[in-house]
Image (cartoon, rainbow, N blue to C red; front, top):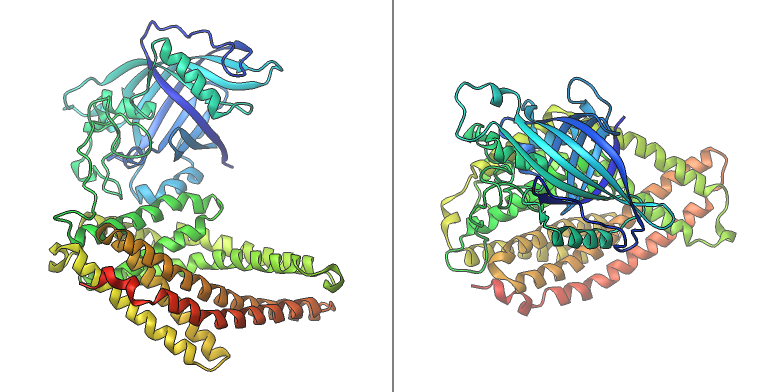
Length: 553
């Protein structure tokens, strides 16, 4: 069983003979207690091309210290990582390798660097003796490991590196203000904010291991080189915060500038959605809040871009990918739809006066939700572990390496992306008008659902066009989003009414009353009627001709 610890820390480079300054009296620190010396021996694993390091991720097997075992560190924000831990074993544990599958695909994880550290630990405590932070003074020895260390011909550079550093990590009683104060004291004493975002990044750079890998695997899914792929002292090519890689030339941003092509704009959007899918994979596996929803949205945005920008991306290449993205979104939707629906029904039930809550309605809803959750959660994990999903990930990696661009992709962006957005808008307009003209009932419900899908596609196309068209595209997307939200609330009501009928039936079969669920059904029906009444006015505002002026060229 893997456990997760949130790690919030700052790192500093120091000279070999540096001394830790007196930190007592800083912020709430009353005493500084030396907690002993630890001998740590860690073996870091990655692919031959360092795909994990490229995204600021580390996987290690460490002995010594109070937390010996396997540690997988996933970036959350600069200076913040989630450390997922598993017990010691000979090989990387499956519960951790599953969390990096979207990055490494089916490549083998091999030892790349061995770090041996002599750590002197100091605890910063407040007046009550509560630990606020841990300050570790580390003397590090790094060596190449695995195949890289056994090659007969090595690239220029040392196979071993040594350095000293300080890590300041918050414990239960500390906060980031304390980290700031301690950091200022350390810098005043001669310490320097670490040039590398991790020990691994520095080790890869200084032992030459970063240069000792196949050129074909230099980049991860986002086209970033692995951190540590050059001289120490610059920013890493991947991950967040500072890394040890050689400072590369900044990537050109697609934007409102001369020479910006349609291919630049569309690929930027496509690359971002692929990155989101890959980065959210471990979050979905860990069942983190909103992760399923965000991953599903990214699949829809990517599929929508393929459909909207067929003059930029070859449809023959993207259509099969789009079908697989549709499949993935549907599989993710099982869990997400349950989550949204349950939250809606719980809120609706909470608004019912006690005098109208007849029977064990809360228990009935909880049982219904948990049964659906248990099944949907298992299905999502089975999908992420399955061969079809792995094949899709490989296809997405390949798409970014060799985008299927059409000749029109080389044209200036504004005119081409404007046409794509307007084409989607006209499709939306037709669907809205058809829905407003449809007879009330199931036919109108289906027509409004179709309009909602068209609104999403139009909104996503406008969002993708923002680098070329600027603020007008952003404002247009927001106006279409308001229409989409109204239509979405209507569709959620349709789905909720179906669930309420199911709950009422189950309650009746169990000998319970179905009155309360019938009451909620009536309220949902009234809400849907209100949304249908609001649609003409909201659509009129969003569809004003002046809002599309930036797209007419």
